[in-house]
Image (cartoon, rainbow, N blue to C red; front, side, top):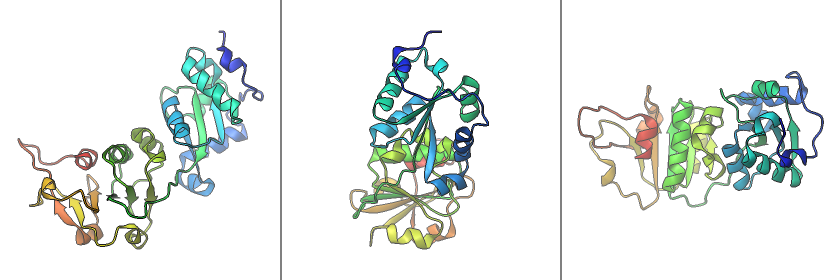
Length: 262
């Protein structure tokens, strides 16, 4: 199979053909939260996510790619050639090795090790979103994507909440991590100083008497979204005013990602 000219032009080292290669083993470790925190890096997979990161100003440390998988993907091959031209290390892998590296069922043939996103928090945030005990990574990622679209200024992850850099959360957020300031807080004592002073705080709650559309959102405010199964923590319930989404029909509640988006 002939490879695109873009791939042939890449000045790369010998192809990695063993999953026991140390570079591959180190990259695989990034699927674990502890290793991501230790190295302050994470592994992105797929053209869209890697491209979103690069277009947001992120410079990958290393690119892994499977030439045979990119033979019929000229857009990916062209993007890879641009990264190589920019001096970014591009490591070719056999298809089997890339499959061992990937977390998806159908890998796209490109992955990148990038610095852990750490955008500066705004000095005077308008709307702050707190995820409290949201444990489903897909819901957390969807909430980040919705938060970016809605103009949320910052997102704070409260204790006992899923890691935002989980690979499923990263895919669901579709690049929002690289454009939206967020922080993971191990304790509420870390989180509270990040909130705007004197801003009203609201908690999404299915049975609340106050409807969300009766709240003034144009001023600085804080919204807490609790977990689907366990709800919000006692700390969040004590600090926030419950608000609800009025619903018709027999639906009793919405999941966290839909409720937060609304």
